[in-house]
Image 1: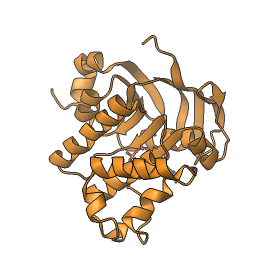
Image 2 (image 1 turned 45 degrees about the horizontal axis):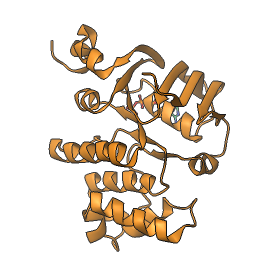
Image 3 (image 1 turned 180 degrees about the vertical axis):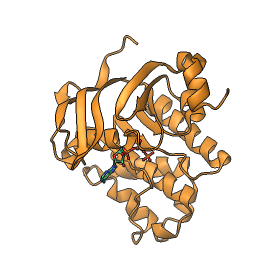
Image 4 (image 1 turned 135 degrees about the vertical axis):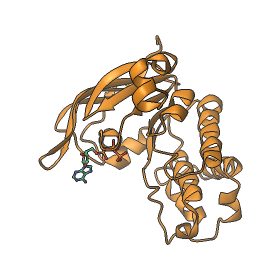
Length: 241
Ligand code: ATP
């Protein structure tokens, strides 16, 4: 890929107390691309995203976004710079209304007309969020909460969206729906996407480039077309052998 990276990680290490979760991860995300990180349960995928969005400070290494260092910065400042995170397990605000959850996603902005326009846009992607705008978010189904988490992350109008396991616990149909919106957001709005997934088939079909993470280390990287053809990927991630 010849386009310039919007995000790079160089030798990033992060831990929870004595538990090393990522052990020297280097990766780069080309501007405008969809890039995926695949790996088994506990490989460290979520930790990579938390370290990028500033929820967790790395112990070593450097993270660069749009040419500037963002490691050890405040998460709100990172959002202001154009990077947002749709977390695993949805993590919506259960007692706030659906509409107010979406507006919380725009907390860094003050351009009211543009916020209203983005609200219309995400509600056109997922009409259920408009139908249930006044209900508590905690009353939504798992799939609807996932739609809300992605939409809330889009409300900051990010240049880079981090997506943690958007298909977790969803039916194949809902997974298809959500991935088709992810592709539209990328193509129509020009949002770069870093996608973490256990559903390797879906991720490799959606993304341009992929990294494979095992025990906190990147063990393989290539275009998704090439990854799909590798015997190890077929056997361990696609269950084809
Ligand atoms: P999953 O798909 O299950 O979320 P993952 O690839 O996202 O897996 P991480 O959640 O990043 O993996 O976890 C990486 C390692 O760090 C695992 O060994 C996990 O047990 C450990 N870990 C994660 N969160 C914590 C925490 N809050 N405290 C202690 N250890 C943690």
